[in-house]
Image 1: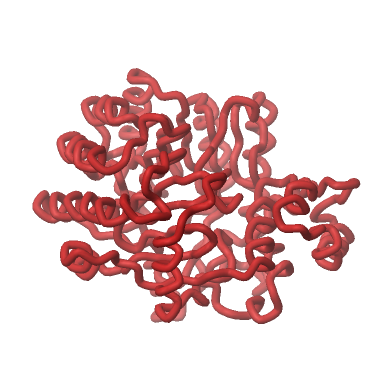
Image 2: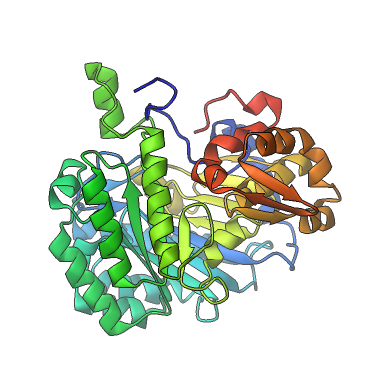
Amino acid sequence: MSTETKTDIGSYFVSNYPPFSQWKRDFVPEFYETLDSPPDPTVPLGMYLHIPFCRKRCKFCYFRVYIQQNADTIKRYVDTLDREVQLLKNRPAIAGRELQFVYFGGGTPSYLSAKQLRLLRDKLSESVSWDTAKEVTFECEPGTLSLEKVQTLKDIGITRVSLGVENFNDAILEENGRAHLSPEIDRAYGWIQQVGFPQVNIDLIAGMVGETDENWHACVERALSMQPDNLTVYQMELPWNTVYSKEMLTGGLESPVADWPTKRRWASEAIDYFMAAGYELSSGNELVKSRATDKFHYRDNLFRGSDILAVGVSSFGHLQGVHYQNQDELEAYMNTVNSGELPVKRALTPTPHQRLIREWILQMKEGRLSAAPFREKFGVDPLEEFAEPLANQQRAGYLEVDGDEVRLTRKGLLQVDSLLTEYFEEQHREVRYT
């Protein structure tokens, strides 16, 4: 395996700009200034709630998670989420605005019991409502679900369930540190179908440690047999603070993950298989039964600069053009909020040019862009602004420019994150991303 193609340590997945490493504590006052200013009412408002609890820590996980926490800690955390929303709700940038979308991410939001989920909904409903939201997404780990809990999700207003399947092979699930096994997938999915939700997504990961051609093809076939509304196919990477990365650094071990050409081939084969069955590509790693009806509002709003309130430990947000992140230690987060202060740890106000770059690169991940909305929003022609990288990437076969339209080829879609740094400002191309 050559050094250029092996899966080495580092973050490849681009989800924001400027890079997170450039966000600073010194810029937090800019967040408060924005929070106390009247909002642009044309910008949609959403909320991301981070639930940091898990049964186990996956060996490829790099998120802020806490395993095997007791009921008292979880109740304290739910109370703290409520307190944080109370601290936010009457500030000028937020007061009176309706939530258009909500995302419960983790960790494992479904680690919470049915009783804890109802408590969370009841507490938050005194401050905010998602009754009129276009979408309320909830991430689930199969082994944490029961019929009662799935019914509770429906009762509290969840409209989009995302099930973290990742793989159907028990040996691979165990090797990679997943908490669930394949029988739990079948049970959980049966309950989800029995209760019924407008949108159901399942996640797969191409390139988990131990993956083979034969097993991957079996996983893809089994995923298709479930007929979800959305299918998401990630390619496994190794950010810095994962178990696998630490083992490589301390033990001098070779990367245990399949190389990038293999993962891209597996992802491409999955895309071909799903598209042959009638699914449509909605981004480089997402397929839907129908692009006309199967929307992912959280992603669409994130990619287009909407306001997203960050609620919970280590949660990321974006408010009226300012990026920010909460404190990332559980006790410090809870202590700060319960002392009556917002827990914002770092922030950054991008320049207008940086906001243009951010929305351009994120929408590139969808595989097709029109220059017209960017001209209208930013007063800049992106085809001129990004003429050099577009020409380079068109020559290399990653994309095609046709009039106002930019379309990524399959080759480009499968490695889109590796293309995006070419659009970064020069001072950000070599810095650590996270």
